[in-house]
Amino acid sequence: MHGVILVVDDNDDLRETTLLTLSRQGYEVWLAPDGNSAKKLLDQPVLASAVCTVICDLAMANGSGMDLIHYLRKDHPAIPIIVYSGTDDTVFLQGILQDGVSDWMRKPVSRDTMLQKVRTAVHLFTLRKQQDSGNESSPAPATTPRTVSSSDIETLQEYHDGNTGR
Image (cartoon, rainbow, N blue to C red; front, top):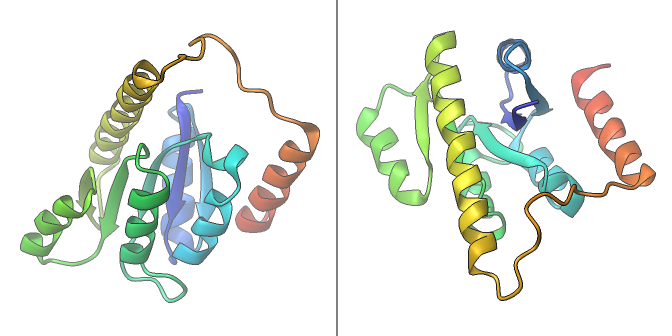
């Protein structure tokens, strides 16, 4: 597995297409239909610690992408954000890079473009985590696996099943 990608979009077909595209490349993909659902997922520390990139739409009914971006910058600053938007306003899209967004894609996006941007974001996440661990006074061993309890796995499975229809 290459990492966990959280896809936040209110379009069911786009979420499923993105899931298929990324999972075929070895990524684990979690889905959220809106910003508020994504925040609930990321408020669970064990689950949030697994996410290495967020792809989010900007215009969603139940929690906008901009609200999610501000939440991520405040509470999960190491997670790179890729905005996935249908807007034609490239000046606006370039401007959101000032808000801490790592990259953006205009819908519809090609498979190759998506994969390239996700690979870059995951690499950025890895570099940020290495830098963070280097800045700690007592660095944790890099090879220590993260321990997940059975209740954490059940919580993740319930969330995943409830949001993917599985």
